[in-house]
Image 1 (cartoon, rainbow, N blue to C red):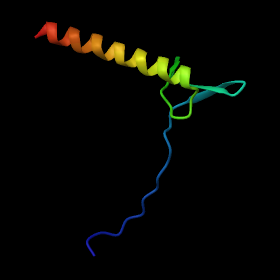
Image 2 (tube, rainbow, N blue to C red):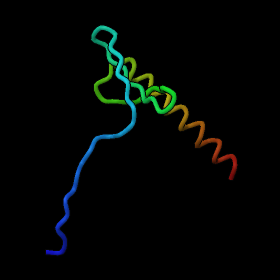
Image 3 (cartoon, helix red, strand yellow):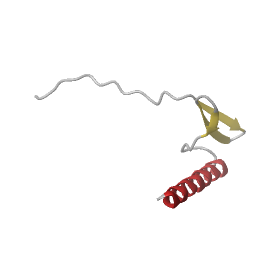
Image 4 (tube, helix red, strand yellow):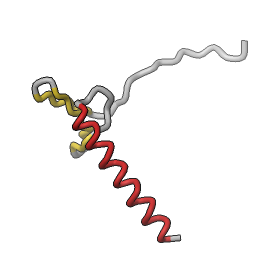
Length: 69
């Protein structure tokens, strides 16, 4: 035996707010300001628009970084 350790696994410690609009679900990360969060199980439209928005921001950041080099 090399090591004998007790490991405690916990979920994320961020403040997640889940909003239900009928059967539609939206998730927000609220630390300290609430912003959209990409979470499996959110309604299709909300999830897709959040993914698209994140992709757009990533493309803009990558483009800006490339122009800086």
